[in-house]
Length: 239
Image 1 (cartoon, helix red, strand yellow):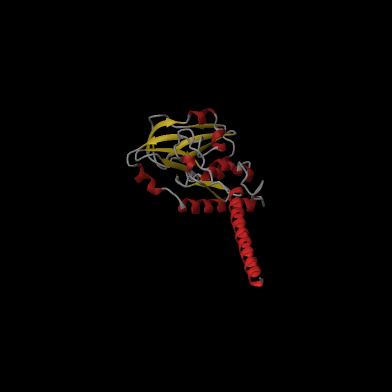
Image 2: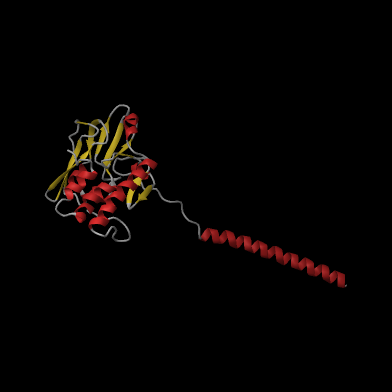
């Protein structure tokens, strides 16, 4: 009788253990289901710049540097659409450096642009600022929305704020002289450090509102000669 009772007890405990283990497994699956995290959502393509904003955006020192774009040291970007076509725009660093843009003058459709030559001019307050072209090619379209509302460049420089569409044979070969991926990130780190060192020296203040750079940083540095600071970063200082 004692042996039978022991066997009964062991069998009962075994069942209890199995039930407990089963409950724990179900609880784990249920907990994972409740706390499941969605995969990061990619930003949709916008306003004709196919795939431009789909790249995951990397923040470097408070400035966006999307993967998949090629950057000119004068702070224009290029997004190749195929072997002959590309879109051109202004970097996040550039738009934060100049601040609110009042007017933007783009090249005419059908005109030729040359790498390192003037691509566009912006009117900011009473001053005019030029930007260099990052690539050679023929202008096949311009962003009319940006011409009407230049502030779009400030709010969405890599999406709706694209500037022109360019046509050129062997576009991929033309982009080899520009910065992309890790090189672009390193370059942006160096540019940001250069600016922040200057801001530290002149103002003693670098960041505002949670660590992001102040919009219109050049004017924050020097109200009288901010355009000279912009030209230095846009590579117009010696022209």
